[in-house]
Length: 157
Image (cartoon, rainbow, N blue to C red; front, side):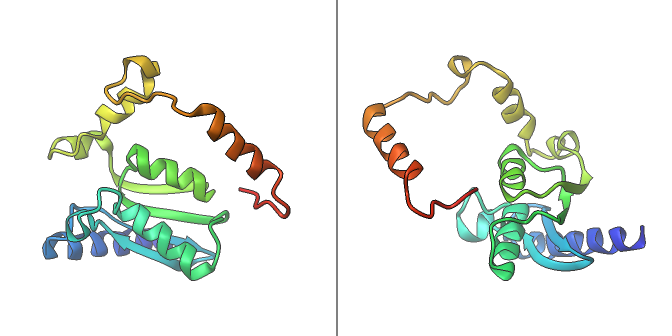
């Protein structure tokens, strides 16, 4: 348990430093493999004017770069806040199986981070969501998809 606490404290330390520097909100994260930190990140949304620069995303990118792979199977993520929908999607894509978080999405909502709205939107049928997603040039896009399917040495995700 002390090991888990140490990794979460590092995530908190990263979040606090970034928050105090004005880089972004109170979100920090570390990616751990075999008891070693292989990726770190803090929220950089304000510092980079990048809405995707959440602490978890920054840490996942750092881990992938350091390890030389997009597949972070076997890694554990420690993050100060329960992952938002975008970060949760990235966690799934990275094949991270376990996440430890400090405060919940409900807790974050009390200070203005309203991730619950996005989770609620995803539960709606697509036609009822605020963001309109419509197909366009489907035939041409399907050709591209087929080209990918038959690529020699096609990468497997």
